[in-house]
Image 1 (cartoon, rainbow, N blue to C red):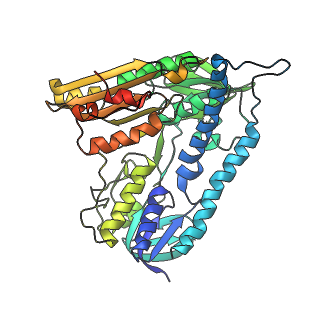
Image 2: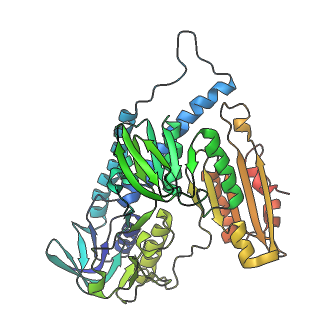
Image 3: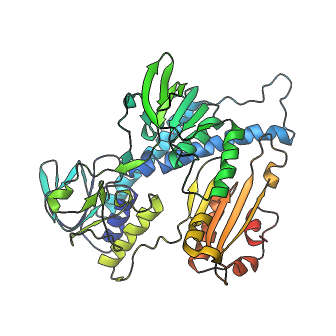
Amino acid sequence: MKNFDVIVVGGGSGGLSVAERAAEYGAKVLLIERDRIGGACVNRGCVPKKVWWYAASHAAALNDAMGWGFTPQEGKDFAFNFDYTDFAKRRLNYTSGIGDWYGGYLEGKGITRVVGDAALVGTHQVQVNDVVYTGERIVLSPGSTPIVPPVEGASLAGTSDDVFKWEDLPKSVILIGSGYIGVELASAMKAFGVQVTLVDMVDQPLPAFDADIRNTFVEVLDKEGIVFKGGIKVSSLVAVDGGVSVIGADGQSWTAEKVIWAVGRKPATANLGLDAAGVVSERGLIKVDEWQQTNVPSIFAVGDATGQMALTPVAIAAGRRLADRIWGGKARRKLDNKYVATVVFTHPPMAMIGLTETAARAEHGAAVTVYSSKFTPMRHLMSAHPQPVHIKLVCVGEREEVVGVHWLGEGADEGIQGFAIAMGMGATKADFDNTIAVHPSIAEELVTLR
């Protein structure tokens, strides 16, 4: 059978969510994926990154314990040995297991799966391995790939995809780029004992985050010994004895055993045949409307390649809502990304929802009110390497509706989700104040700010 109700191109988070939900509604579904099921998130991104983060958290906790009275016993070394090779194998087994599980799961849902490179050859046709499949609708979710800038010697550096293939850790690393990927890799590597340097064109890391919270994060980087070099345009990479040198346009240079490009990702649409189907794109990004529909009525798109927030839950939400609307009879279902919580898994983690103070003032001017607090949490009162907490609420108007929540510090990764629910319901500062706090906790500070 080569005719389907929907052909889904891409077996990552977005594509899987469409395929699964559509099949549950009784649609005949074809899922095409050239690589392992699960996409970047399961195999090269969110999942292996979070496992890495947990391992690094254990390393940090062991070091902090000395401040709480845990000291080396006579004849024993308190410092734990870390078998990274064994850890890497077990992490790979875990992520591979997820992809293997999906195979049986998709079959159980009645979803037909084809392995290969997909290319549009019409508004209802997709070709894979010289076979043309026809679908009443097509959903594109090809994901993204790491960007490698066209500078001299660029191939001497790896990408974030390569990091999770390492069987051993290098002694030193230079990460070019200080967005999510760069700082997350830097934080974990430092906890593992790697010498880390961050190099970027921007003056400070994580430019999309609130300036005050970001400034505190920069203090953490410096305290932890992660070297940040901002305002640097990389002009070339050069192989040297023992590693690679990164050369800046101003003549500065840094050398490390390994260099990693972490300057962002680009849509994986170059060979998708968008032109053959008449699908409009811009710089490779598939243009969609609020309903995830392209300019071609039968073709839709979700996920990173659309230029929407490059977050797994956003792709999943878009995919499920698309399927709900088309095959589930829920005519008004669509993605609402006004208040999406996002987390940077560093040590400590950093989370945000909504507007930064700068963005809020640009939009609302003098109607903005800000509440913030910066302190050392109880967890780190005696830690050998204490980490700060910095929290901030951005409110607008006489009602002081909360339009931004920013949280750097332990617990931010888990606690931020509940505040996203409140903000989605239009919570005000008074609503936060009326909430009975859990004491003693970090989260209570967000409902007791003055």
